[in-house]
Length: 135
Image (cartoon, rainbow, N blue to C red):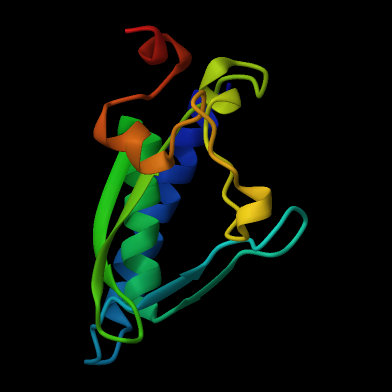
């Protein structure tokens, strides 16, 4: 059932992206400032241009279809960076989630231990599930 819903969502999002792109003005910069949580319970905030948002949506669609996605964006300082997205549907108690570094920016809440890995490490080393941590 979840796969059927994912497929319907992907189709609708693909159609929406095409419609959205046709309505954009000629400012096609993929601007996205992504602000992480400072500490537990605090908000994460995205401030994006229309083109940046559409690019991010396409990346999320790719992750829904393929388990991962990436895209090139720029921040408001015109510095480019890569957005990496990994899809994982395992339970929170599984090693994949338990060994993933927390997203907080304040160091007291994000103390890396030898048993945790950053999200970029997961992406770079092909860790998409708990079974990949055993390899």
